[in-house]
Amino acid sequence: MVPTPAGFRMSPRHRLDALTGLRFLAAAAVALAHLPNLHADASLGPTVRRVLAEGGAGVPFFFILSGFVLAYSYHDGLARPTRGELARYAVSRFARIGPVYLLSVVLIALWPVGPVPAGTAAVAANLLLVQAWPPLAEPVVCLNPVAWSLSVEAFFYVCLPVLLWAAGRRPTAGPGVLAVLAVAAWLVPAGVVLWHSANLGPWSLYVCGLCPAVRLGEFAVGLLLGLGFVRAGGPGAAPPGRRVRLAWTAFEVAAVVLVAVLVFRSHRVPFLLRWNGYYTPALALVVAVFARQRGLLSGLMAARVPVFLGEVSFALFLLHVFVFVHLGRWFGPGRFGSMAQSAVLLAAAVLLSAVVYRCYEAPVRSWLVGLGRPQRKSKETGLLTRLRFGHRAGNVG
Image (cartoon, rainbow, N blue to C red; front, top):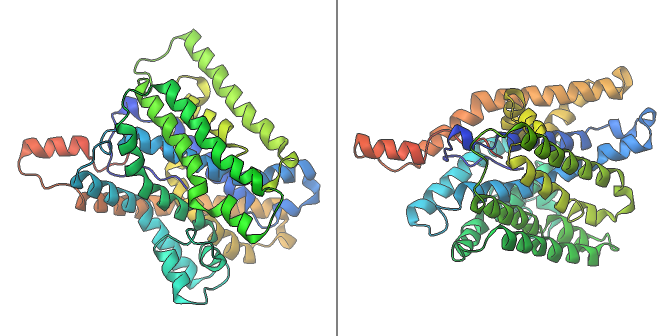
């Protein structure tokens, strides 16, 4: 799941609100794919069930979005990082993912949703968010099963300072060069996945789906496009005219339609390639186009309700399985039907996530980021600190 860069403040005109709204749609797609009985409902028809099952495409979207947002947020501070910059970056990353993740671990440890880990090594791997790093099955499936993607994301966080430092040594590389590098960052891991696509053994499943080094390609695509976005001037400052808005709306519609076409044709693509590589170009196009926030669709996704839902989507991603398993035992499909059960489970997961965000995630994050701020020696330096490392997180991804 893609976290927002805690501790980073953007002026209102530079907030990438449309990407926040899209983040909720991706989290909801993943949740739909995990509903316990909806995919077995024959009344929906095979095409609908197959489309619902493709909600896992939300995960590569999160990885691409993460690279884009973090490049946009930290391209300057981490290009030539000081110890202070690195310390603040580390605190902000923990503040963003740590509180809700630890809450999910506690809840699932008390009320398990899957296999209970057999040893302390698996528990330690989950607590340290490295469960997806080694090619071992037990640490990945124990406790919160969806957290494997957060473990991959943690690997990206470790790599980000090095990647932005390397990019900072080539400040003259323009958007065109960066776009070409993004294509290469997609093709290399996609080639690895295609090579393994005929084999669904444990090793191929790990390499293509879980291995952070292979999935780094998706993150690098987003990062390179994010750097190109920054070097091209970022989001437009002035509201677009009518013709410009219509043109960008057409681009946004085309990007969304491309994703929809890929989803409907996904049954013709090997499973492993759908997991990693197949959707990458189309999802990257969606991120790059909607980040401009110039069309009608991006304006809709930047509205107040989609943005709020995007802010609660991280909790939704981590807690929906917990809700589905335990509430689903009481609210069974035999009594209410799979459609009614799915609606109630999804609504309950969103409601719980909103409460967690308001009452726990946002305040704890602000407190942790405050601990990582430099000491204010005067009113003037305090003002500069607040402007640069404000307590409110930019809501971009």
